[in-house]
Image 1: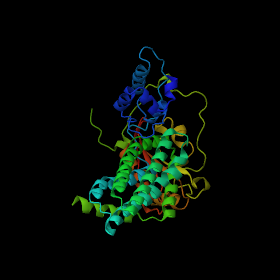
Image 2: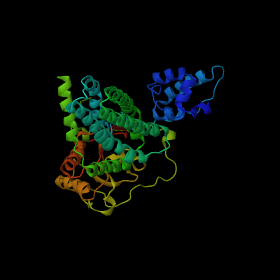
Image 3: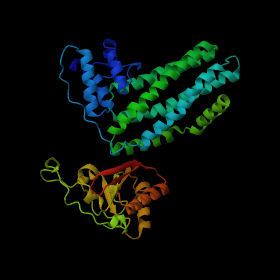
Image 4: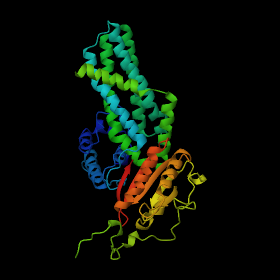
Length: 260
Length: 157
């Protein structure tokens, strides 16, 4: 079993598709992950399942991998308690979650924007470029920079889940570059393809962060680290001097236009 | 038996029959995690060196007696002040001192620990008022401790 505990989840799922269904039952949705290099043992720890559930889940996975053997399982990872009820996000983590809300509002608007896409007019091209500016300035420079430059520095950079998240950022930047090139060529198909691909990527990416990564990080940050993070985020925001109001207004105006 | 009519904070209760299992008994000498003096909020200077950039713990007087593992779990690594929002006088000074922690001593975080009795909420209100008046913002967490040392609530302000 040790061998599979130390294997990337995608590899395990490819070899044993039934494992994906078992993980799903426990709210661990690794199947659609674009990278899937997280080790099976890390996934179990990161999801903070109660120890008895962990044991049952691992026994079921072992049964799939070794149907004819009785496999000794490693002890369940002790669940990190967060008090009598789940601790709400600390201020720095809440800031990241709140930033996701505006990004998700933009993602929700993309299909309507694309339906209305007209790259033959300057107005139409500008709308897409404003969307690109929102992604590059707000979602990437303002939000992802805080993750990559500050938050991730508190964790082991070799953790597969961090590699997955950073890889999503890189792939996202590639789609955005392709959108800009599509606008330059007035290539509607390329703009639509890459903007939709960006939307799909970010939707899954935000879900991974909100539901798995942030709660896990929150459980592992000390009070001192939370204070440091908060101060560093404020410094980063000040240094960037970015007015978030401009981006909020961009979204509000689009929502009025497409939801009216 | 007549229902108790007075202040819940002063209600007489006896926990002496509570059994502590063998496994819960600490063995060996328990080291104090206190790293400063004084600790009473009237006596401390908010600009004392041990508050600068520190994770500060503001604890209601009774908490450390109710909570068995207070030193190891909560005081460790933090700078401390204690106060009683029910009995202490001159609590305006408390607001000024907490504000000075945030703005001048530039503390890293503030944790407020109070008892579950209603009067103890006053200490959290003082901290909240000071944090609202402060120019700097820092993460502020509060914990509510039950009469027998259980953590009833843990939240960020």
